[in-house]
Image (cartoon, rainbow, N blue to C red; front, side):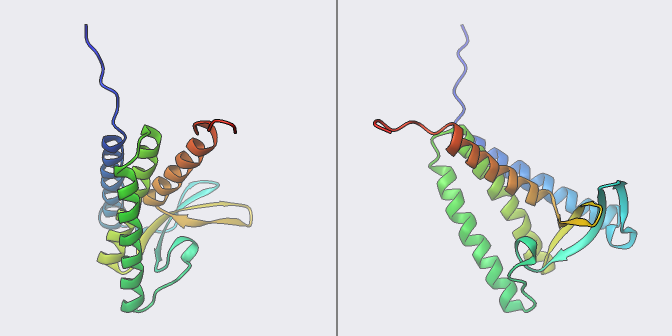
Length: 166
């Protein structure tokens, strides 16, 4: 009789982080060097989605835009610090969903950090829009980060253990 071993949250998180980082960086390298996105933009994929080339020198929605090397390295240090804390939390996770969510966030954050170190800005490509409404431009690392946060929220709302007397 074969017994399956339970998934370890730490292993799930590390695997998710590695896969997210690999997919993100492979996609960015392909878009920049093979597809040549900087010279082909915009590319209409659907009536609501274009591929474009946008260099984000800040964080989400271009907040805290860093135009100087000091600002860039400050954002990189902030990213490394936050990623280290999230990785520590992932290492101590006791639930698989926590490990998976944190792994996606860590992998995405490292992917965007690599961009910031290598290019001075984060490479973004996906632009959703409907009529005059335009969503910000993002990349696969951002998708991983948002999916990871969604998993953590889902877990905290729907999977939280009930405390006695609550």
